[in-house]
Amino acid sequence: MARPASSLLVNALIRRVFAEGGHAAVLAHGDDTAGAILILGMDRGEYSRFYERGLGPAGHPTLVSCGPTDNPLVAEIRDYWQKRRVSDPDLWVVELDVAQAERFAAETLLFD
Image 1: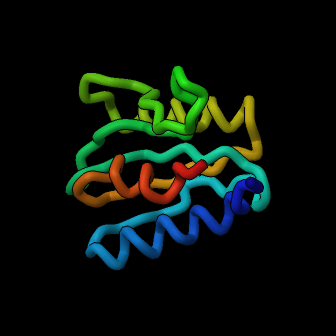
Image 2 (image 1 turned 90 degrees about the vertical axis):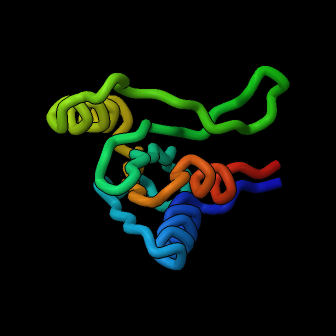
């Protein structure tokens, strides 16, 4: 099965978060068709985690936690995704500020 375009997934994710009363923002616009999507999860303005789509042990899509941990500074968070964009200029970076950001990302980005 063909994967939906990255821009379609990002737009769906943003609409779902706004519908739930949260906030979402595109920090970096990647390739519209096939760009990877890096999610910056926030909860009430506080850093939660970075997430991205990956493959689990059984070969099925899963959400992988990545990036800095242990209450990083704002500069460390920004530096992480900006370094990722240097190596992958097609990468989308989307900030989700909503309770259970990981759930929103998983429900929108993971499919078979």
